[in-house]
Image 1 (cartoon, one colour):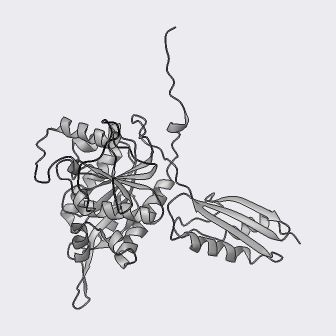
Image 2: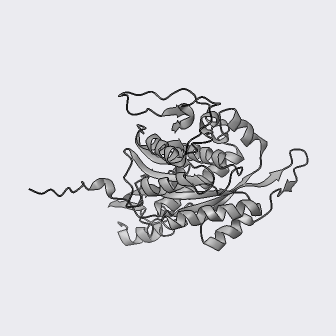
Image 3: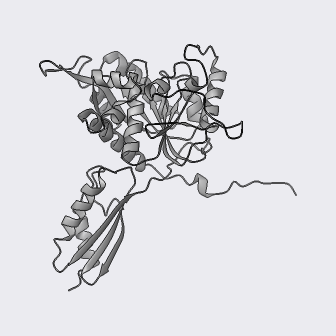
Length: 362
């Protein structure tokens, strides 16, 4: 007896994507359901990078469908498809970049750059095409963290080729100046440099461009909000009260300029003694969770205060690249998936699908 499509859809409603918390039917992840006598084939589309999740979801779908009597063969195809999402209408799209994610903090010293690069690497590990833009004009750190150096190459004398490091496409002002040269620039010069770095780099088919923002809420941030198609931002903080005060300012800034805050990451949330194994909350406990609840933004996760994270970044091979199967790398990947899921829930952008309309007097 051939099973009905309604019955099979009901079975698939019992399968919940562990990353979105929604079933595959109501979330519209089910893209195709084909029945041929006693054989069924299913296509499941995920809107976020999920290389490590595909087999998990495929297994859950197969198990659910095999509960249907009369089925002899079940074929399940699970794949990811990352699309462009909405950004400020005042900004122009960046060629070959679908989504721009700003990683910000209200103050320095909270591990924002280390978090940004590891999240970029985690997105790439999960199967996305990812770029890293170091927007900290006055204190670029991504070249050191990714072990990269040298001026970018140019094919035409006008645009720059991104450096490649650990699977990321990377550009930074740090590639264009000597390591010990201070950037003594006024705000307009710095913001112009940022725009050129973003728009004059030949990014190659990126799902995500992760932008490591400078600390604070100054000219760079306003330029990014007004002229760059940022699809979402995340805030990095520590549990410390002073850090949280400044993180709140960063969060409110993005709200005022119309950029959705996709979530909050609490860095240095705990430290485990390498000798006795005791866990201590050196910078306080629970501050990030309380802030996320207060401002109704997702709490993406907590990261430890761990000497390896610092050492590996200083050596030019961040944790997700150096020890991809470690517990810390898995924490970064979990946060990156939550970030990508939050972004996938935003409205899609159709800016690149329509031609520009020019009105001329004839």
